[in-house]
Length: 152
Image (cartoon, rainbow, N blue to C red; front, side):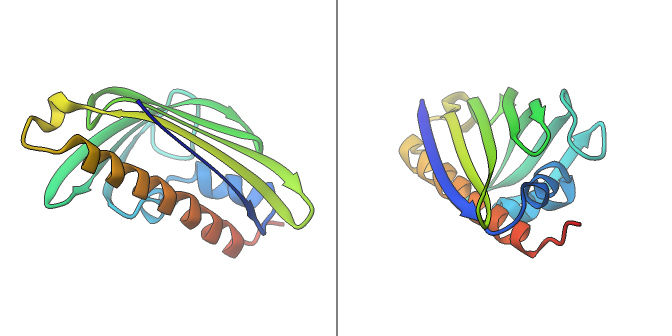
């Protein structure tokens, strides 16, 4: 099991960060290797909403599945993995706190790459590094998009 934690300051109000988190339009812009996302039910994030994301790992197309497991508006956004796909286990927790000049964003991702999904030909540590890189880019893209967002 791999855990990644990151914290940073976003120079935007929590409402702007929240808007980027809950609007599925932004998801492919957040994750660099995501090519498609299917949301059920469609629309802004709600608890129980299922996401099926397709992307690339090297030259191979992969899929991972998540579900919105918790929402506290402007404060906490939680996803958990669903059965099947690239991760045997997955959880994502993003906590937002207003601070002077913007929002403190604390992120925790816990995951385990599914060896059954990829098979013996794939190097699990390399796949983990790709996942970590995606998460690091995700948080910085979230910061950048939220800072561009105008919230009244």
